[in-house]
Image (cartoon, rainbow, N blue to C red):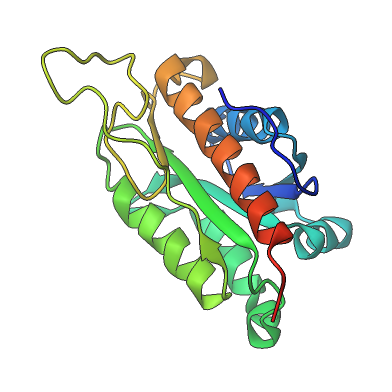
Amino acid sequence: MAGPSAGPSPTVAIAYHSGNGHTTVLAQAVREGACDAGAAVVEVRVDTIDERQWRQLDDADAIVFGAPTYMGTASAAFHTFAQATSGRWAEQAWADKAAAGFTVSGAKSGDKLHTLQYFGVFAAQHGMHWVSLGLLPGWNSSAGSEHDLNRLGFYLGAGGQAHVDLGPEAVTKADVETARHLGARVARTARRLASTPSG
């Protein structure tokens, strides 16, 4: 795993909602990856966000969005949070931050791509720079396995799968490691953006 590189230490915020704990597992992996890459990290549960946490999002160099996929999109709690950013959208307060996303559902596909696309459009509306997963798909040949990184084959962000009748322990190690990879990639990208002269 790549370590920290030269440049200012970025702050990565993880803004997420978790229903059954599965998304929390991925959020913690994103945090670990970003920390390993030299970032300072703050976690914000969007269903209980307070004014201090709003300021943390405003001050961050990158925001990684996460939510479970319910009924083909991000959870209602995340949508409520997104709508509450409309004032920041009007001011483009988050413009030029790095952004990325992760999601989890019970099925291997589970329409997770739609949730990741929703996050991407949301970030674009805020003028942010989207950071893709940056991994080729795993488990797509006879030589692959369910233990591969990006075993579910998403490019736009990190996707996880966990059985709906089980708790956080149902999130697979491969999906956790994929989310960790995303966190490190976001931190490295945020550092490069912070090192780029403006204007």
